[in-house]
Length: 156
Image 1 (cartoon, rainbow, N blue to C red):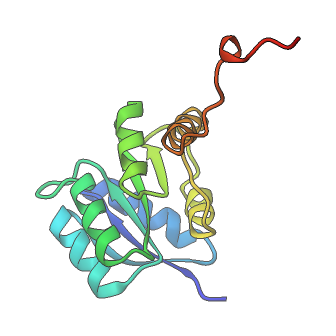
Image 2: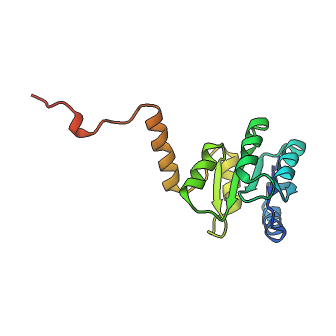
Image 3: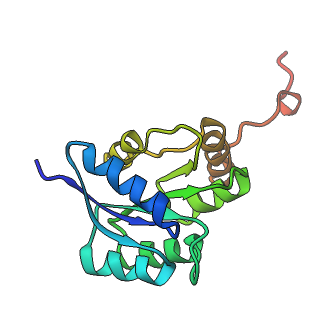
């Protein structure tokens, strides 16, 4: 079985090193490239064609949302996990809407290895309340919302 190939895009060298070290210890994972800004992240994905991109939201140059949109356009097979210090639901929802398959808040204790494996299998990795909100929005967009009980006709 081939390893899951990963590019790590993180502007803080120490944190990027910790991620690289953690992933390097996990069987079946291989860090094939790194980037410290948005342009480098786009170039690394284009050059290395990774299975997964871990993407810091606050990259210099092009931020994570801009990189995400570009990567999903020219490398739709690459699964993206956003890593961020931002825990606001609006940021998480925006990342998922732009095509991220996962969103991890830095320092929340999430097992990055588990998240990468899940996203690689095609799953979505995010807080349950956010996933529920996304599903609710999809139901409303599809026009599948169930009418309120008060709108139902009386039975005679």
